Structures are given as C-alpha cells and as structure tokens.
Image (cartoon, each protein chain N blue to C red):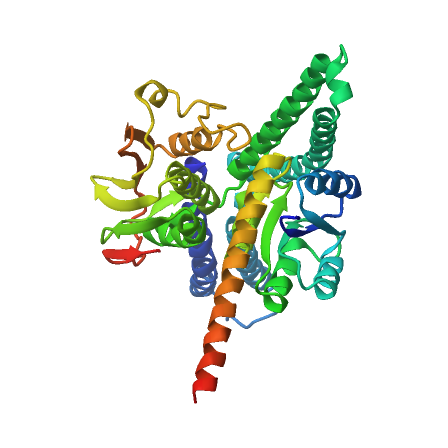
Length: 144
Length: 344
C-alpha cells in the first residue's frame, strides 16, 4: 500500500527524475510538475494528492506564488518547501504562508521522507476531524 | 576630513561679508571723492572726475562679482575639491558597492551550485538504493568498494552544501542593513512559526518576555536564524516524550539576555564542550548538519555577544544568549509588555 500521494515540483528535470525513483521505491505515489502552474494543474486533476514538495526558485510562477495559490485553492494539502537557496528568508516566507516545513538542497532522502510522512499525517488527522464534524452535523440534522 | 570642513564656514563668512560690504565701500568711496573734488559731481566735462567715478563703480561691481564667485565656490565646489573628504566618501561607496556585489554573486553562485550538487547526491543515493536491492550485487567483490565510493560522493556533496552555506552567510554579512531589532517581537514571530512543529512533537512554547527590553542592533535574518535554530533544536530534543520550551527575556546592565530552555533529553557532559564546534552533531545521520549552533555562535560573537549552555541529562537544556543593547540615544521603540503567552 502506498504511503502518501506526493507532488514533486521542480524545474530541474534530472532532479525530479531521480527523486521520483527514490521516493517511489519508498512506497510513495509520486506525481510531478516542472513549474508552479503545472503544480496547480496537477492538484486540480488529482484532488487526492496529500503533500506537495515545492521548489522555491522556478522560472515563471515561483514557489512562493505557487504556495499562495495552493493554500487558497487546496487548503488541506500540506506543502514542504525545498530550496537550493540556503537562506532561511524564503523558507520563513513560505512557512508564514502556511507551508508545513522546509528543506535545503541537497537534502537527505531520509529527512525528506520523514517530513513527508509527518505532513501526510497532519493532513489525514485534519481530514478525519472534518469527517467527524460532518457526520455529527448529519446526525444532528436527522435528530431535528 | 574634519580640518577641511572647519575651513568651510570661515570662507563662506568672508565671501558673504564681502558681498554685503563691497557695494557700500564703493558708494562711500564715491562720496568721499565727490567731496574732495573741486568740480561739480555731474560735470561730465571734467574727464578726470568722470573716469575716477567710473573706476570706483567698476571696482565695486568687480568686488560684488568676486564675492559672489567666492560664495558660490565655498557653498558648492569646495567639498568636491577636498581631496581627503572625497577619498573617504569614495572608499565608503566603493566598499559598500563591492560588498553588495560580492554578496549578490555569492548568493547566485550558491544557488546555482546547490542544484547540480543536489542532482549528484540524489543519483548517488539512487545507486545506493539499487545496490541494496540487488542480492547479486552484494556478492560482487566490488560491492564494498562501490558502497564506499557512493558514501564518499554523498559526503562531498554535503561538503559542497556547507561551502555554499558559508558563502550565503558571507553574503548576509555584506548586507549592511543592520537595524534596531525588538527582541520580544522577533521571538513572538519565530515562536509562532515553530508552533506547528512543536505541537506535532507534543511540545508547547511558553514566552516570558520582560518589559522594557531595549532594542539591539542586528540583521533581522540572522536573528531569525538564531532563534529558529535554537527552538528547532529544543523541539528535536523533546521529540520522543514532548515537553515545554520556555523563552525568557531580561535586561542586565547594557545587555539583553535571552534564555531558551527545554525539558528534553539533555546533553551529556562530555558533549557539552563541543556543541558549538562546526560539524559536531549528536543527531542521527541525515537529521542534522552540525552547523546550526556553530553558525549561531559565530553570528552572536560577531555582534559582540555571547552564548552559553547549561544542560542536565533527562532534565533539559538551557541556552543563554547575551547581546549588547543598541547604543543610539533615540531608540523610542515600543517594546511588548511583560507577557506570558502560550503558543500551543
């Protein structure tokens, strides 16, 4: 059984290719996008995506802009920022906008896997709470 | 530069006095000449009187022009001709410009290098994954050698990352935008950022911020980096059993004191002396670079401050930072009052 559905967004094609192999091997179901806009299209097409691993610096729509749009259109999806720019500023900007965490390139695969699992758990817990709340509402409505 | 500047007001005063006095002197001289002359003043037949009067008016006009010229020179041109002043200013501009462009270059290079390095490290990791998966490969006489080479590629990749990190740290140092930082506000911001992570580790962040903490002079991004590093470390230390992080601020003499205390696993005495060493980490491989505290230490020392640690195994760890207060006379920044916030 696959652990989580992860969308990997980076304009560095060889990086994405290798990460797909490595994360798939660790039982994640991986989707890819090479720009912010492609990421939004993928999320639209696959609403069951759990976690987005998002590069900060990309041509066209950059990671921070993409993050803003992801959080406004798909608020339940958790985002992990991945930056080659080893400054905390962009990562802090990302976290202020609701990203779950950040990682600096080159990142250790185990660290990335760990963060993806944590992000997925948070998303699952939140979904569960929403389901419970909805069930309670249906129950109360029937009681009327 | 000061000696040259001192001469400037004197020159301006003389020029201004000349501009005002010279026309009067010309008029007084003309009247004096009229009184001395036997001939009537307007008798233009007297060529000598006419010429003398004309010469005096000419002299007066020349005096006014000369004084105006001097005044203009002193007001506008003198500073530009002051070689020492020019040299000082040029040096400052060149230095600032040089540092800014080196900083920009370093940040650009760091980014460009990190991407290919990340690809190399991931490819090495992928080969390692394949090696571990293939039972036939494990029997190969070259298996151990291949493993060693792959580990070396990853180690060197991590080294590249540290180098680029240092380049960026340098770029930040060249950022001359040192500013007055309100420590309490910054701690509140960083604590809010770490709240989610702390909650996930079953931890809570308590703030006990003293009133009237004066501002410090620092780079905001460096201060954020310090607080984020220390809070993240504290969260990591409590990851297994959860606990409490207490951040306290106080003022002692001309220093601001910040304490970040956790109730985590603590640091064994043998490790305490080494925790600020670069690349020293007790975290499992892949969990930490061993640079966080070393970077904090360097930034704080560069600011003229100090950082100390006290720890007891199974009780917790307290980091104490002391940073010098901004010396400026007019810091009227409002500091958040003494509050006890819960950032659960």
